[in-house]
Length: 401
Image 1 (cartoon, rainbow, N blue to C red):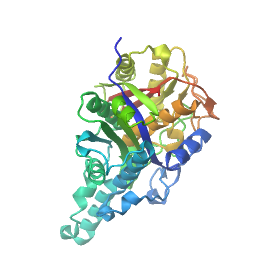
Image 2 (spheres, helix red, strand yellow):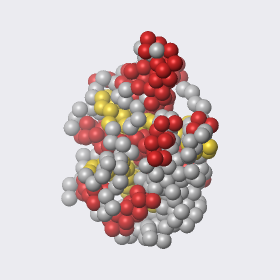
Image 3 (tube, rainbow, N blue to C red):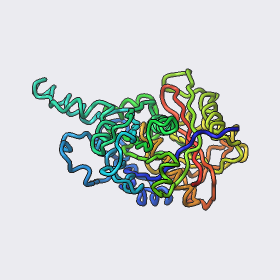
Image 4 (tube, rainbow, N blue to C red):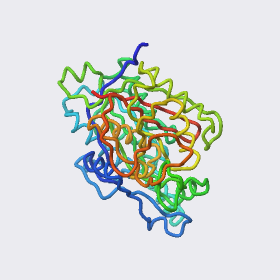
């Protein structure tokens, strides 16, 4: 079978509730540390846990116009700046026409929206800032990245709910494979912690009041989180020409849709399973070649059950499975990029992190979920899953460089 066109990962950046920078985030994930806490901004609501990013700063936030950026754009810019530094790329020296930007997110600048609505209600419409729309529109993270780093190739902002990050990775791979760019900056960013969004997820029964514990017998929902992840993807020839060290190879990607329900996954997992099998076929590999799965693992009753069942069907060899959402919470549209970055680190370090919060795996799940402590485990190929509201399913296949 012919392998997919492929791309190489040459840099990554992470800004999450576990810290700013890949080293800090990876340490927290490998320790199985939880970052959820009672959030004063959500006081008085039925559920008030969140995972917030600690204070962060970076020179990229000190340029002209930075004062008007929504928090989601600030998170995204810092993650991309980290990834570029990691990749050894200087935006002042590149051909911007050969650089693409693909971003992922679901909520957009909801904090800017909240402030504008409050100001309008209190003072009237004439007091709404002219910067409202540039802070609120969901494509502005993409626009700000392109503007700050001089990327004048294709730019795309994807929104497939919680599958957005992996969707963005797949789109970036296709831009590289079709010769539309040499470098693709992929960024998933989300700053969704508002009273309204927290209430919406609570009303759907998706939020936890006790903490995330993916695949646990007592799981009762996710914890809403903010954060950003970024990957630098390059054509292998381009990376080789500048003597960059690839961190991993992106060898497969696929997407499929449930067309079942607006917020509930297909109980049979048909769309998610199809996306997984198509991604493996795109990579030109058989299921038994996969050594590790970074699960979507939201900690909701239904999602985890459906995902566990499809993993058992597709991967009878029971590769070790982990979910980062026990540590980082659910960053919604950003999680696919964040978790792909963690998968790259897992391949690079021969380590599968534990699933924080998991104490007793659901008895109905016949999968090998890593719990307690990180597992030393060498894998040459790993799969990263993302499934979202609307029935969106996206799967990426990554290989050791």
